Length: 239
Image (cartoon, rainbow, N blue to C red; front, side, top):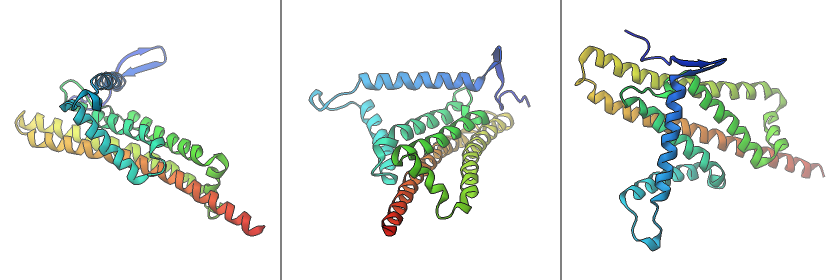
């Protein structure tokens, strides 16, 4: 079996910059999402303009459902975290499902793409933690409850980032591999039930990735706050 449909391959190279099919698909996906957002904004109707259409109702329902999920985890900081998490969810859903279009493959089947997303989550966790608590208060939680645990805190940061990347890559790659094998062995009629499972699994994996990112951000914000409160209590007790 040809390996080209399964694994990302190089399209062209500009000096040291290598452009792979994953990069091209991601660019097209971002353009499509931008056009969708632009079209959705142009078709919005306010209360004074009558009842919204089916398109606006569907978009608002999707956004409200994701907003409720964010508020359940971080009710006090939902306004800060919502844009990042919702963007992550929307991108992952479309990226996981774009492989159903003939001639295209999911960017998340490429470990470099999932690693980039995991690194983005890693940086965002620390950004939101520092933004919420301040640099000193946030870094203090790595020494809590004892400085001896600092290496373990650092190891956990690395391992959970790797787990994010590997989990998403492994699940999406296995989905595409199973679908390709069934088409190759049984023809076009056999994979129809598998196609439905592909859609469900793609949605589940997008939800899990985004929810884990949300939990990590919530942990960074809350542990920073706990470390700050503990330090304040200790200072008051000494006084």
